[in-house]
Length: 265
Image 1 (cartoon, one colour):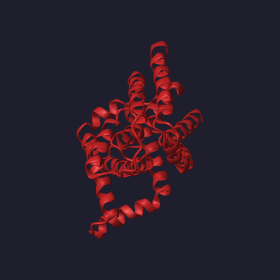
Image 2 (cartoon, one colour):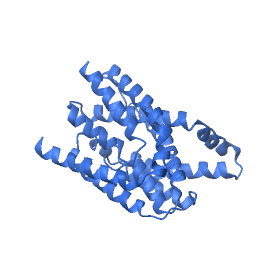
Image 3 (tube, helix red, strand yellow):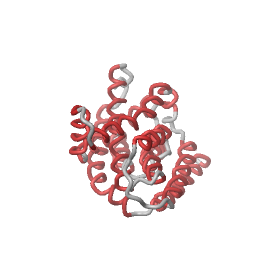
Image 4 (cartoon, one colour):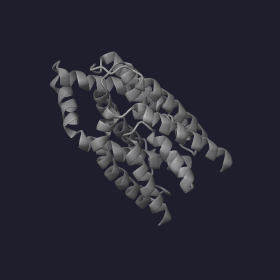
């Protein structure tokens, strides 16, 4: 029962933090440490992947019309706005996909209670958000070159503590892209990667339920999915209308707490 409750809490954390620029993976690692993480690196990574899959699915539900447009744009083979946007999504995926394929085993070790790493990376996220907050607001859209640069930011954000949405949205804003467009692109660009990761692991038998609490994973998934649905409906407006520095200060505080916790725990 205790493990079920922990999974629900972690699912709620994932659902709430996935759509804010505060690092959902970093919060998951902190949450695991505070709740008592008795999982192996493989089990911890499994929990992280399952919860990220849940929020990716909630993103698909919320942005289902955008997803349909992306798919239609690819298969029309006609140069228009939908086709260009689809190509930009694909371009943005390449850096993170390469990192995931080449250094998958190394990445797995980062999800093994590296609270000190999480703390420092949250501070890095905060600094990035501060710089982005000072950037001038424009109405620019995402260009092909910008899609690649934003994709590099997403690849770096594989590190727990570096907010994926924070890194990609901040990079977009620093490139002069409109905040609402930046948030939309940020949320959509990760969906194919999450589904691709799940498919890759299923094909290679890397995701196994042997020795895992399937019920705990299931309730964690449901908690993350439902919370993600609720959070995603208002997060874009929050990112658009709020100062990114507010999230930066939050990252600084949580990052420092994580660092102190690591040394006193």
